[in-house]
Amino acid sequence: MQGLPKRARRSMKKNNRFIKNTLQIKLYEMKIKLKKNSVGCILAIALFLSTSNFTSLNDKPSNEKIVRGVYTAYQKKDWNMLTSLFAEGFNFSSPNDDHIGLAEYKKRCWPNANNIKKFEIDKLMGDGDNVFVTYHCWTLSGKVFWNTEYFTLKDGKIKAFVCFFGPGIGFPNNTKK
Amino acid sequence: MKLTTLFAKVLLLCVLLHCKAGFAHTATPHATGTQNRSNEKVVRAFFIAFEKKNWNSLQQIFADGFTFSSPVDDHISVKKFKERCWPNAYKIKRFDVDKVVINGDDVVVITNGWTMTGKLFRNCDHFKLKDGKITSDECFFGPGVNYPNNPAK
Image (cartoon, rainbow over all chains, first blue to last red; front, side, top):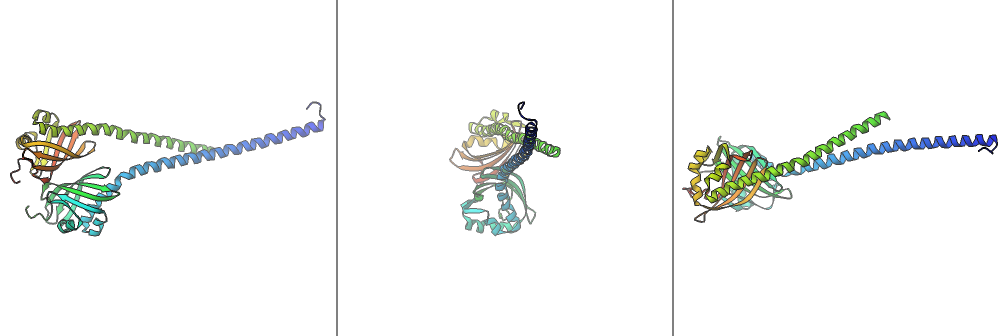
């Protein structure tokens, strides 16, 4: 800049200052953008992690909820609610029933619902589409029975369940006990 | 700007804590998995002892204060269990373990038991364990003779 006239040097200095200022402004804007983006990124990661965690936790209780529905349906004496939980080709087994279909189940087992006061689930253990339930049940006449049932599900519907008798009368309409 | 930085830092901390919790979640099933496997082994040993008619190996897996329940037994002790249930062992040919579901110290097993005379008893046993020993067994009867010495069937 030494050989240049005084006016030209001043003009160049002014220009340089302007460029410097513009660059500083741009840099500042970039910083702000970066911060906004990082906040956005953190938010997105947090959201992703929380949702992925929730889905993994929510997968298991769904079969549990379906199985609990069976006992609620019996307590409420709601046949439609019960059948909405069953898959096509549903079958039921117990010491007295060998893989009976839905029609036979309605005829033989559903009348017990009218004698059931309440169920208390002691233990519910799931392993994928297999669920074990141990419960105490009280009849309207105050009798108690304690059974275990093994459910097999597919696509959120009950394909089959097997009833094992524990202490007590086995089932409310048991004429032998 | 300072507020934004603070907010970002808090969020970052949350994410880190969340990740840490996530690792804890993945670590727990692994620990439970090992416990599950060893509990399954103990429960399978129960049926093997019956098949082999080996009272000593059965006794080894019972915790102090073990109780047994079934539709015909109400929380009986080891002594009563030996008196009432063990004689069945001599009429058992084999057990086929059909289903096992384990949840920590709770193990539920469905077995098909075959008597020496070819009769079937399909039962469901709910075992409770503590420190690798069986504290209780609740037996639920399914189809079949229920137990080999059943006089009613």
